[in-house]
Image (tube, rainbow, N blue to C red; front, side):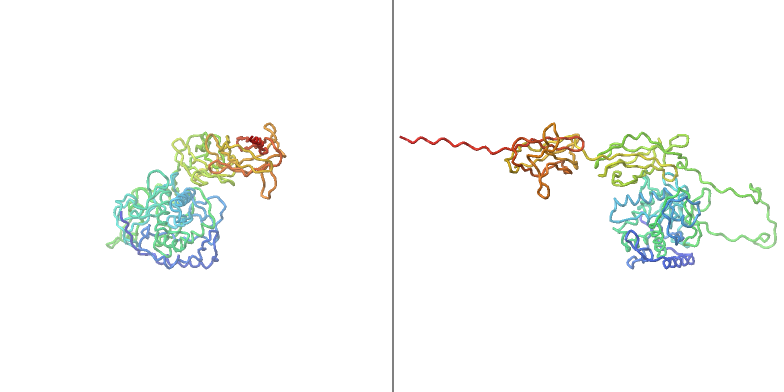
Length: 583
């Protein structure tokens, strides 16, 4: 479906102007510099002149939150999550599931569009400005918002005019379009830009995993490289066509780059101000039973007449309410509560039968980690996202090269991590399982990476290895290493000239190798087989001692090969008898 876009008619010019002044003040208060990614700091990141405003946007140029990040740099250390509506340094906290969705989208785009260089902090900045990080992280275990987040209907009354394009399928409005979900896509854009970010077979703009991945692809269009300021500006302007919006997103981007941490779902800070002067009102979670179009911002109706003065004049006595109030005057009202999600019921994680995890360097682990989420009573909890993180100094990764993977538990409450791929560093590797959006103790798994090994060695040729005293062996020795019949590459080997088959001590006479200085050596260490499992030994030399000698090659894993060497003087032929003189 072709996207329909229009330039927003701003009815909140005063608020936007104030936001612009605040941005300028913030720019002046922060010293310019270069961040640890080598990019310009926000104070220097002036939008490039080539990034001209476009008439198209992902959001239909809907209103957005104008709250600025704090002047103080964020505290990167985890802290207790604030209650909804908190402010200050807690702004750096991003709800766990929302943060996981941003990072997962970055990982996916790194493989799908490596030239884009999309940072997850850009998605976080846009998510903050568009929906306050899904209204403070009010999402379920699958990442779907507990209530739909909708912008006002785009009916041309203070906003762009975009008539309905989806028969109300996404926004519940069959008259006009409304921006939908945590990343605020209008339906006509979602129709082609939507993605399935949580692998559930659906493309749902109300799901933060789907919306974050769609936003990433949207920003990476047209072969943009977001590490370049010009392309970054163009990408942000394509999302919402406003210079104030661009400046604001850049502020949050640089703020999040300086450090952030996750907070429990539902405890993120809520913004207060938006670009159309509707403080804290949009995007708005829908409430069942409302009479306005789903999620749209109610417009004020005619002001009621004062009591005692009806519209036609005269006086009247107001009628008492037909139903007495259920709450006595002055009694505190009970605040609405959010129903618990499945994640909220998780009390702990248990191992789900993971076997011993061992692999040689460079190989894939044959076993995978399995974790079960359980309630306090030991009942399995399905549809909970479990994050597996490889910790410590190691080059072991999950298949695909990542050190973090997030998996949802199945109907039995079990999450199975991707296969581990051993790196070259040997030793113990720790994989930690935690529940996304729930502060319960993590569960650690130990995996062991052993050095590469071979269980068999064989010569690749059968030519006799002989040499005259003081000479050089004509044939170099080449061996092939295998492990369980397969090529054993990268295996470390040692070659030693020994005294006898039953005496592995190094001999002090007979054949020898030469080191880099030309000195005699009879033991070589640190030899390594190549990608084909082959190892070619250096040239061998002989001293003046004749006889039969032994060369032994050994590897990790117990493979051993003993080769016989012969040093003998060349045979001299006896002269033939002289012919008798003829008579």
